Amino acid sequence: MDYLYHPFRSQRHTVFAKNGVVATSQPLAAQAGIEIMRRGGNAIDAAIATAAALTVVEPTSNGIGGDAFALIWTEGKLHGLNASGPASMDATAEKVKALGHEKMPVFGAVPVTVPGAPSAWAEVSRRFGKLSLSETLEPAVRLAEEGYPLTPILGKYWEVAYNKFKNLSEGSEEERKSFEAWFDTFAPDGRPPKTGEMWRSPGHADTLRQIGETDGRAFYEGPLAEQIADAAQAHGGFLSKEDLAAYQPEWVEPVSANYRGYDVWEIPPNGQGMVALMALNIHSATGKQLVYGDAETLHRQIEAMKLAFTDGKAFITQPDDMPVETAHLLSPEYAEKRAAVIGDRAIDPEPYELPKGGTVYLAVADGEGNMVSFIQSNYMGFGSGIVVPNTGIALQNRGADFSLDPEHPNYLKPGKKTYHTIIPGFLTKNGEAVGPFGVMGGYMQPQGHFQVISNTVDFGLNPQAALDQPRWQWVGGKTVQVEPDFPLHLAQALQRKGHDIRIATDSGGFGRGQIIWRNPETGVLEAGTESRTDGSIAVW
Image (cartoon, rainbow, N blue to C red; front, side, top):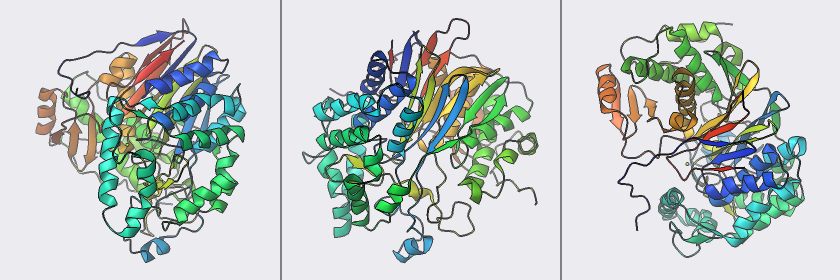
């Protein structure tokens, strides 16, 4: 039976609930969040439970060894947490080049940075949770210990990862040894588990148990931290136990753009959420009438996004290394200057002239008014391919985004945080929460945020329809990919405007999103989940 064969059109509807909603990409993870809410936890506890469960039931996209960001609405205020980790204090561009690399490698131990996800769970639990961290991690521990059957999209990407690491391990003896623990953990029978087959990870369960019992510190100090550092350094990486011990997540002030009466919120740099806000501002500054299903409207949206993305990649990194202030990139002056560049034809974008001088996403809401937008990732699928033996910890390869060019703002430095792709989103209106939203998927994320918000605010689509709308993705120059079910007449009209339109054969690269909105009059929660993956909504 082919679980990826879908000859018939299917349809999802918006899901409604009063006491609680968890929307994410895996049914068992969504149920873990609701289980914790039913035990007396709030939306924050449920978000932690869901996030931890996702490291077990979707290791193809995230893990204990990755990073996390969160936007948390509680008691009438929005809070931002940046739990992305920096490069090792021993990592320098010179050392990377001395290893024979002209640019940052993608896999192996060199691009491993300090993982922040466990610290995010502990920090939001400490500040806003009602239950202990140990209690909130119980469903994830149980899933890892007892095992679970693979879902279709999970099985698909597990096999993709297996083939990738198999090819990589066929190089040198050192490369073979680097990925040995990955195969021991994620392909213990000599092949990847298939859709519908059971998979379990006792080591993963034990690691989660230690994290819960120590409020996260076991990951950063002590025997487990030493195992993590040893695994990285054994394969030529820089991560040390001192790097882990020194790490702390950072509470930050979210940044926003007002888009047609709604405030759209993102985490500030080093995250790329700024790109979505910049694109919304540029699009709004064109001052043109918006028409649903109209090629001219789509053209202006694509042009706004490519300008924002070009500037984001040129300037966004750790704030103290950025050549321009965040405030300027969100200013009307910037938006108007970039909007003036947009014409009737597609352009090859150039970076703005500066003024002189594989991720998982989850959304949770409860009946008390708490709402959480949470995202975590190993970056590319399983991450670096470096796995800490017998722990279930796959280390991220986030450092692959660093530049080795000393003139680039994202130049690798010891202890520096790189440009980061994962971004949670949140929507408010007149100071009141509308709700969390997000679309995961590398550089698709700000493009997904932009399209979801436009679908919602400009065209009044319900949460499920806003996610189901066929997406486009700017990939560079004048090239734009569109989904297989993107309307052909619109693709042809965009082609006539100078866009190089490429129709994708599947929707795997167009992001996976979740939305929860709260009805301001009734308090009822309404949610949509991603049809492009094994998405699920659990309600109470």
